[in-house]
Length: 177
Length: 81
Image 1 (cartoon, chains in turn orange, cyan):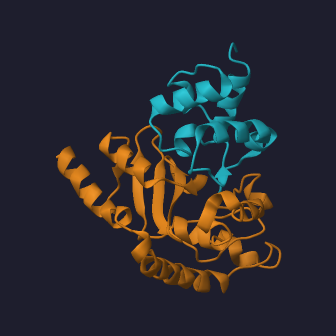
Image 2 (tube, rainbow over the protein chains, first blue to last red; image 1 turned 135 degrees about the vertical axis):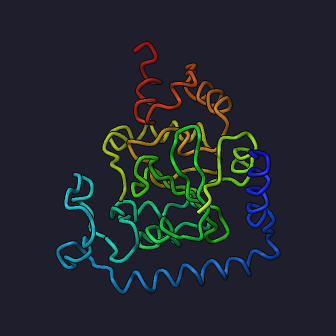
């Protein structure tokens, strides 16, 4: 049963693994189109600050922690409560992200975290969930807490080889919707 | 929402050193106080232990890898504590 599940997972991941530079442009275009669609929706609702867009917190719990209180960028209607601090927006410009640098706005990150088309993997080493998807030709990992999937605890690229090896050695389990 | 990263920011240089010693092409753009090395790297635990030993000259256990990164940094800086 477990072996069948791993095989199923690997077949799903072939989509990512088989992307070569020669066809990447087509996939890139698809990914871009999809994300641009998200951006269009979100940015129509975005406010420059919480004071200018008081409804940005609509639907979220009032018990914000000290970090949440400093948020100045928030999206309304972005799904299950993902919010991104302004400082992280600057980090998303970091050159170490390669082709992702400058192409992931805080708004887009929120949308990516709640993207129903992303693959979700349980990390058995931690109990946390990795949300993985192809963005600008690179696999982006958004890790959420195991006990609170709305809490993002880290963001960064992930290597295909690491993902494959993790599945094969049992560290990562694909979470089926 | 993003988890807090106050402790990470207080140790920014050491965390950067750890991540550079540990990671090749998976350098994260956001690491919170709740994240362990497993949350920034897909490397196997054995490889992570080896790389940390090379970068810091300190042996860590597999249990240490489950610590939040900021606590692991403290552990690497003061291995006897």
